[in-house]
Amino acid sequence: MNSFEYAAPETESQAVEMLGTHDGNTAVLAGGTDLIRLMKRELLAPKRVVDIKNVASMRGVSPDGDGVAIGVLTTLEELVASPLLADYRSLADVVDGIRAIQMQQTGTIGGDLCHLPNCWYFRNGYGLLGMEGSESVVELGDNRYHAILGNDGPAKHVNASRFAPSLIAWGARVRIIGPQPRQQTVLPLEEFYITPQSDQGKTTFLEPGQLVSHIWLPAAGAVQSATYEVLQLQGLDWPLAAAAACLELEAGHVRDARIVLGHVAPTPWVSPEAAAALRGKSITELSAQRAGEAAVAEATPLSDNEYKVRLAQTAVKRAVLRAAGQLEENL
Image (tube, rainbow, N blue to C red; front, side):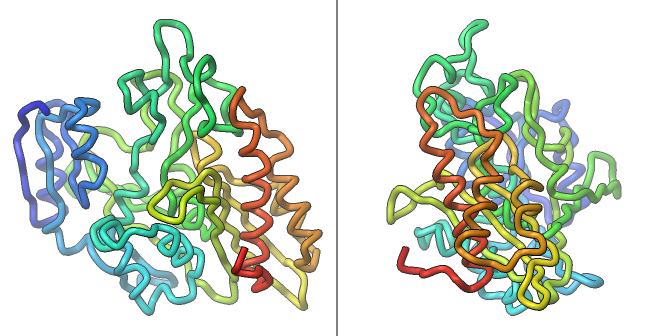
């Protein structure tokens, strides 16, 4: 690990000021569950690490206008415990799938949203695109966990966030502060993620000197939601595929729907096709199945990951059935 400066701000303005040094070669430390690993492997070598854990305004869940604001330092355990999030079932589904008490107690929602790809080529020094010279080692090598959607460009990794699909399905927005003092930007979480086109590219909207401070969710109202993750192990594991569903039902039929897939593309994958397959229909095994089929109709699997097409289809089907209260939970 390279040497670095350590800074511990206590306010948002201090955090922005401390990040705006060393030509932006700085890093944010929240829970630290991933940053330290990346620094030890010298995949990141910031000149300054800004530890934001003492910025009280970035922690907790609070009412905010006609919705709810979640500070990025809020732990997964705190998310589940908050009565303000009791009606956002899809978030609790994600926490339930993270089967490690340590991660639930120390992992933060902001850290999850900004988690860099778990692609083993990236983690072993081949860059974001997994290139060796002009050749893609992802396409030539073991790509069983890589993208099946949105992979027509050079990026083949999958977005690592477990909460992004459910939050995007809810229409979440993120508040970004910096790089100038008192500067803030609010944008839909869906627009926060970027598919890099080069190893010098980025995976999120964030520029040097910026950080996410809060996530905003609209009021839950009568929306029914769920997340379904396909996990290979019973213990701590990353999903092979996931889907989140938000459904608005009227007289037993779907008035509106929002379906977002995770771990199948370089960004969380919004599927208007799956939503369209549900509108006007009642939720049944058949309609949920057809939504899953629509979600993966344009999939382009790589040499070793065609199995993920079926898993993603199943994740959509079960997320829809779970949101409607029709999933047998012993599956």
